[in-house]
Image 1 (cartoon, rainbow, N blue to C red):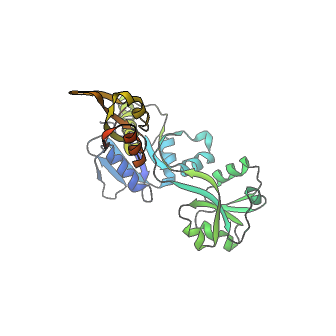
Image 2 (cartoon, rainbow, N blue to C red):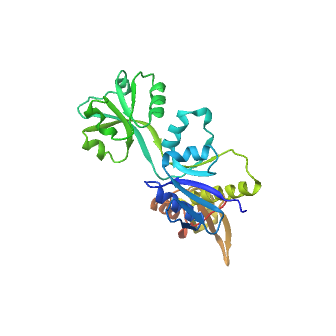
Image 3 (cartoon, helix red, strand yellow):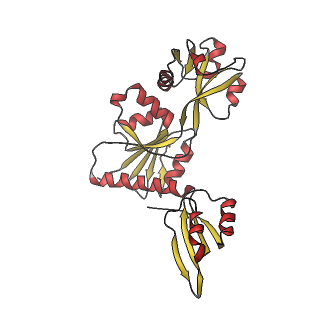
Length: 294
């Protein structure tokens, strides 16, 4: 039977659409199952399992799934619970699903720094991360573990302060809370494990990882073409952001100028183009990069 790769992603939530889009951009075509909990790869032997986000690190860790996409906040919390039995590791961050785990308290509190947490009760859904943060800051406080409705814990008398994920801050404001310090910054990440695999399956994993990294590389990359005077070539190429090895080509019938082609892996702003023009560049053309392998 054909060996198939198992990839776990979030069933529903802020990472789902981004994860499916990433796999689609990696060239994977899939058919959703009837219950939409398993997507069957059509052009590659890959199955996508849609599961609860906090199940993904465990499924990758125990080898049930070969790859997984989960938030770093979730993976860190799962790893902190039982580090000796956790065998998943991060391959690469994916630059989506950004969020911050922050301490917060009543807006009437005159917050003056992390030392104010000492001796308090702090409600959170991420006790492992919070305890590590408190330990690093030499703070003794009671961690109150809750699975939901963290924002109302102070109103209910369950805790003095909270530690929760914050994006816009609107939920905190609605509950008369103010954000304080960042405890943990997170984004989605690609996970795998160190299980022994057949050469065929390992080659497939390497292919998927390489394609993911290629998709990430082109996200901000641009292909730039321009004419540059030979006498000022170094000044022009030095202005190309994130370009290590530009290609220099002659122009037929022109001796004092050359063509420069380069892949720039940093954002190209209008100011960059204006600086290039001031350095003598002309006919500047900037194009998006769809795919890249290095």
